[in-house]
Length: 78
Image (cartoon, rainbow, N blue to C red; front, side, top):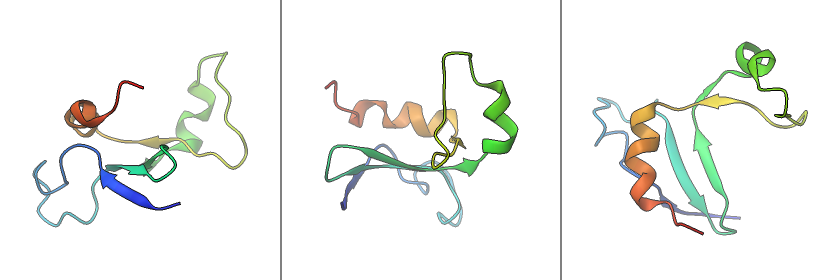
């Protein structure tokens, strides 16, 4: 699996001075998406809705609203 492209604006375009510690979204060669965000599994695991589940190997990460909103135009419909 390889990273194909960034989805949305780069951290620098969103105002990050260093561009090295900001959330990001990438499309992968298999059509999946990879997200760089702040790890928040311990804080949010107990807050998930009753019908949501997380596998032991999965983590909850937080990305800023701006990151996702600015990626919206690059996310395919299907």
